[in-house]
Length: 248
Image (cartoon, rainbow, N blue to C red; front, side, top):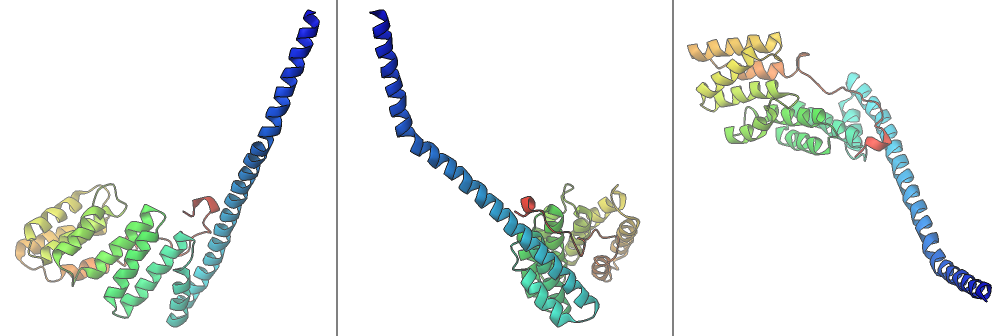
């Protein structure tokens, strides 16, 4: 009799498992299908980004070749297209190059706008702060001190990649804005800063002497000239294709 009850109970258990399987398999199949869709979407997006980066890389090299040949019109046209790329690293560089051409044409407002867009599109602090610093340099002669300070003070933080260059520009802006004491303090910091180049220390020491003697008219030109010197850290003109997983 006991064997009969056990056999019946086992049969009932098997029926319950069968019923659970019949009810649950569509959900399991759906979960597998969803996982496959997610994987396919991820793979497709990465491939799209990698293709966009490769295309932008080629276009960027061609645009820089046009610059070297003096073909500004072709270069600008190419940089405009690169500035629309979904590969944000190249997009940022394309926007910065457009801004440089605008500055050469005397279109400061348009250049600053492009530098700001490049900073937003940047994928690294180095590129972002480079764009922001160039925008501040462009405004150094014309913008109110408050606007220039708003841009440069964050960049002058010791943890930022171009902190000393930003502090140098900030010192000149304050001097031009009627704050010689603050400017002198900034230059004094630069003159003894461990990370300052010899050129930066020399300019800082010269600036302090100019402030003490009241001869400061040449300082803005010195700093702007320094912006194009090799001692300034700059973003490479050509960068390798951005990896698919690092395109942001």
